[in-house]
Length: 372
Image (cartoon, rainbow, N blue to C red; front, side, top):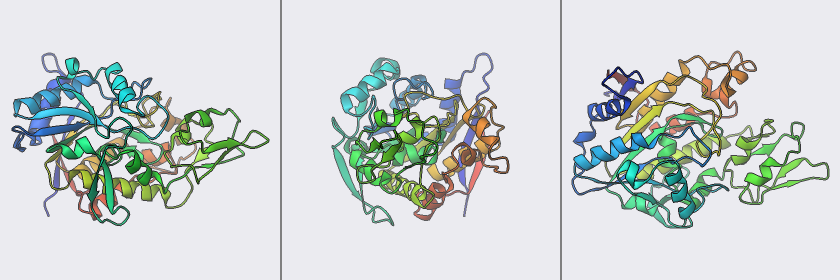
């Protein structure tokens, strides 16, 4: 079987040739012009960044893809779905405010922002896929109403899935609030009481009243209320909250891959990932820690599984920044060779690749084609 083609260009830019031009070039080399965009609605799935986070992709990159889609006759819009947790993107009004605050306005990008699952995250389409874990996926309706789906993704670490790439951007990102709850339901965190410092930051980030404190001030998580969103894991500065050491994180990754399948099946798709400002955690945080590795480059492909595998391989070839979450954890996990496992030891990013390949989402066998 022929290997999937993944196109790559680095972040070097000589005078007279900038990074935005490189993004347009690699998108064309990867074949975006082969898609029939004429009079088609085109959902460009992107993460607008939680207010306070500065690691998200700059809107300048989005404008390149918007302009290209318009040139090819399409009708693009930038989109994402609402979040489960407390923050600046929990409903469509706040979400659009956050997008505008971070520069994603119609004036800067050339197209409108549509929050795909509506005002309260309940406007969803039901997509039957009959997979191992998900029978009917719940996807933001505006995304399913589109004719073409493009993923424009910031590749980074993630505290529950190992990394956030194209599969996560499409799978988790396109799920409605109920869809996100379904994906998260198997992975519910635990408090390591001996590490809890009683700071009570975790209770402030929990949107579901699942966290309480005992008479000694130690946090506890009520799994009957917890939806497994993982925000408490990211907010804890003392590693006192972790995913349980069972199959939960794998199930989360597998459900995420099945949701991605629901989004892209039976319609044109194209995927772009930028490996820059590689933060240890998701852009859903209201802050971003220092990058864990140097900026690497831009990649594009029709195959999201191959794209994610290529991005992971490139990151794992890098030497960690010493003054980063990864740099600090390397001292504790000297024998481990995988940067994502070191960054978040309880995660297993490979499961989203393996399951994506198993269900026909794409192939992990790829050819990396470098474009200057």
